[in-house]
Amino acid sequence: MANATVGDAQLFEDTFTVTTYDQSKYDRVARIGGTSTDNQTQLQLDVNTELFPVRVGSNLEVVLATSLSLDGAKDEDEDKGWRDVRGESTLADMYDYVCHGKIYKFEDGADGQTIRAYISFGGLLMMLEGPYKKLTPLRVDYTYLLVKK
Image (tube, rainbow, N blue to C red; front, side, top):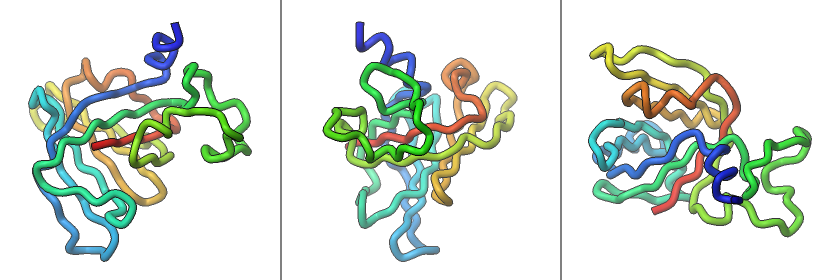
């Protein structure tokens, strides 16, 4: 039963293979590009390379979720940070790299069959492009990014 509600909190989940890596603009940030294992979804993501080193060819499991709570409950206390959990287990415990940000923009893809979602995590940006069906759960709202190798 708990897994069903966690699934409700998860807006997007896929595995990507890193295909590009560009660290030319900043010392500790790289823009990585990746393709999902089913080749339907493209990802561009800025990552802090000191916290989460990654290489071309790495496989990353990427999740976007509305809550870090294991029962899928929405974060009720907005003044409480994601690290103020007081010994509780959260989704963040299962991932290597966690960010909180906002989905702020959508665009139609170049082929008319896909959609692009743009998300900002305090200036570190993410772009997902894929079929409408896979990205339909996303909407302009706050979200958590969870990534693990």
